[in-house]
Structure formats: structure tokens, C-alpha cells
Image 1 (cartoon, one colour):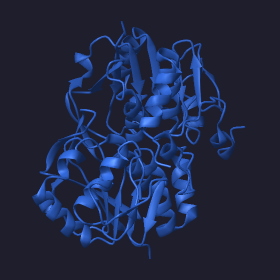
Image 2 (tube, chains in turn red, orange):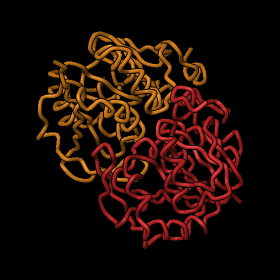
Image 3 (cartoon, chains in turn brown, blue):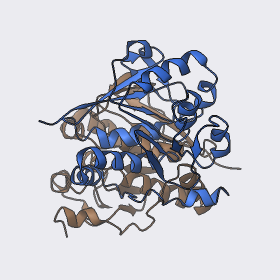
Image 4 (cartoon, one colour):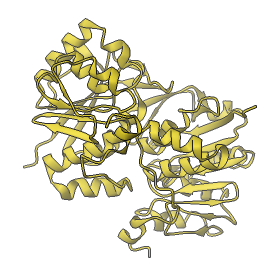
Amino acid sequence: MTQQRRVSVVLFEGFELLDVFGPVELLSGAPDLFAIEYLAPQAGPVRSSQGIEVLAPAGYDDAAQADIILIPGGPGTRVLVGQDRFLRWLADFGGSAQIVTSVCTGAAVLAAAGLLDGYRATSNKRAFRWVMTQGSEVEWVPEARWVEDRNRWTSSGVAAGMDMTAALIRRLSGSEVATALAAAAELDLHDDPAWDPFARLHGLV
Amino acid sequence: MTQQRRVSVVLFEGFELLDVFGPVELLSGAPDLFAIEYLAPQAGPVRSSQGIEVLAPAGYDDAAQADIILIPGGPGTRVLVGQDRFLRWLADFGGSAQIVTSVCTGAAVLAAAGLLDGYRATSNKRAFRWVMTQGSEVEWVPEARWVEDRNRWTSSGVAAGMDMTAALIRRLSGSEVATALAAAAELDLHDDPAWDPFARLHGLV
């Protein structure tokens, strides 16, 4: 019997749209495998960095146990890394999940919550130097489309979240499923985690 | 002086998330060039095909004159092509825009509204045979990442919308702007409109 995993997407004021809806596009193509839940500070509207609001059905305090959590990036992460109450909640919530993932500067938030201590991780390349300041116990990898280290998966900026998500689906459900989901979205995947021209573009290698 | 263009995104029940938020991710990176407006049947929540709702600030009847309109695809297009009142509104609204674009099965809706009559156009490859039934006066192009014909731009499925949008930005604002916006999203563009492995996958060529 197929196991359905609960994927909890942590939204916040100023989250980046594509960081969320790229991965969601892939995951939602297999509803038998992945049930997606959205969390925001409170149930109700939460504003993206692009201005448009989405309606979160649940607040952080209502969160059920997650199998996979996904933290997007966006300008809002600059605020989150200083919010102790949020970071304590995230440390608990993420610490009890089977798999913890981030896209873009979401890695800064995971790092600030201590969830990447002792792990290899990557993040958005334009913001990389700032992200590194959020986790001195993290082994930051500057040149990577995404990094998988045990149950922590962190991707580079924005569009890289889709490649990481496809790789995660491949790991959990096999390459046939991952390939079919990408094809349904007519998405041309990068399946080499070392592919990263953006590290060079931003002088990180 | 730089001209700012109003991009009106037409949302509807059952729109595909990435069809909208892929292009929006690129366009919103240049707010001096593109002002994005979202329209739905009425102002308020509108449900995506993935379930999550977004809050549209305006209804179709409130729409201001658009420079560019964007119609996403998604399961909701199957309903829209039969809604005469909506199609009449779209024919007027799109007919007065400078540029009319669609992503994925959004082309079926444009075709049903008559907005592609006499034009070359493409659409999602898995749904292509259905889409073609919506416009007998359209010159459907089965193998194309996107098609530009005068002021009509139509893309293939889902992720192809990002490549088309980057090409449109290139046409309107130059390749330097388009390249910078794609790099900011760490997006690896296909810039050849003839690149389309999905046509073959679905037996269209």
C-alpha cells in the first residue's frame, strides 16, 4: 500500500511565490502520495513578496504533525530570522518531521532555528553571504543546485526548488513518478545537484 | 522614460498555479516595467486547481484597460470554454489589449473567445487534441515551446509559460532585462521556441 505523506508548507508575510508554487505544482500531481497543507501565522490571508495574498487554511499553532516541511524564501525571511517565538516553534515543528526542506533563503530560517546545525546546506546564491551569517554550525555549500544531507534538503534560489523537489520525489517514490510529474508540467529538470552556474555568477566559486 | 505596462492576469476557479506564478515571478522582478493586476469572476478568493485559494483584488467587471493579458490553463478551462458570457467579456477585454498571452490550456479559452482566429498558436501537449477543437480558424502548432504571432503569444504546458514570458520581456525590454530577471530566479531558460520534447512524448509529431 502506498504511503501518503503530509507536506506542510510554512507561509509567512513576504514569501516568494515560485519558491512555494513550483514545488507544489510537482507534489500536487500525485495526491495519493502527497497531501499538501499550508500554514501561516494565523489562518487567513498571507501576503507574498509579489503582493498577492493567498488564504492559508491553518495557523502555525494548529499544525498537525508533518512528514515533510517546506520553508520557502523571500524578503520575509529577513524578518523571520529575528523572531524568537517563531524560531522556537519551527525548531519543534521541523525537529519532529521526517524530512525538512527549504527553497532559496528559506535555508536562512532553518539555520536560524538551529535545524541545519551539523548539516551540509545551500541557499540562494545572490543572498548567500547573508544566509551564511544565520548558521555558523552549518557546512554551507556555495556551488550546488540543491544539497541532500540525511533528512535535510536545501535548494538554491527560487527555480532550483523545482529541481530539488523532483529529486526528493525520486528518492521517496522512484524516478518513474518524478519523471512523470515533471513531464506533466512540461518541466525540463536539472537532475545533477552539482549543476550551478549561479554560484559563479555571484562570485562564490 | 520607461513605459510601465499593465499586465492583467485572468484567474478563474481551477486555474493552474504555476501557469500564473511562474510568469509572475519574472514580471514582478521589474516593477518599473510591469504592474501586475489579478482579475477573478468577483473580487475575493478564487480557488486554484491545486486547492489553495488566492485573493483577487478585482472582478472581471472592474477591469481597467490592460496592456498585456495573461490567461493561464488548468482544469477550469474545460468549464470556461462553454461560458458564453465570460467569452464575450474576454473577447472585448483581450481584443482591446496590446498583447494577448496564454499559458498551457489557456489557449483553448482564447480560441473559444475567437481571439486566436487567423493566428498561429500552441498549447499544452497532453491536452492538445482537445484544445484544437476550440478553434477551427486557428493554425495550431503542435511542436513549439511557445508561439509568437504578431501580438498573440501562446505557450505550451505549465513550465513553458516561464520561457514564453522571458521571451516576451526580451522583445519588449531587451535581452539584458530578461536575462537578469531569469538569473534572479535562478531559472535556466529555453530561449529556442522550437524546443519541445513534449510534442513527441504525446505523439503529436
